[in-house]
Length: 139
Image (tube, rainbow, N blue to C red):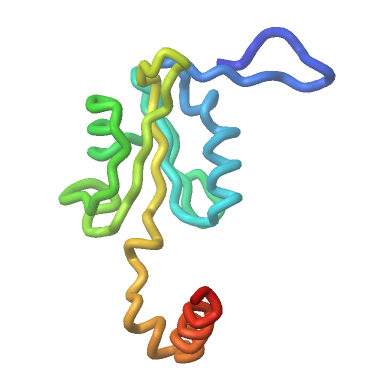
């Protein structure tokens, strides 16, 4: 939740288990802007935000992996069998207090898991040469 006090001309942000989508919006926007991939975030007791293509698509969002991460307090990489991101690789991490208590979760579509390495090597044959050259220099 937003602090009531103003610090040096800016407001601080606090996240708790009751943070609303509005409270989490600055974090969702920052992560989405940095990564440029679908981003989701919610608190333990309130649904949150889903962002894609630079826009907030949903301000009342939850997903099965966000909920599982909050329930287990463990980061998860998986391909959901249901929900908006069904069939797509996602990675979701818990948002914790300093006492390791879960107050929310944040997730993104996992682009690394979605990459087809063999196709990349075929399209960029120089990558293999660069890897081999680096290996030789390390010996």
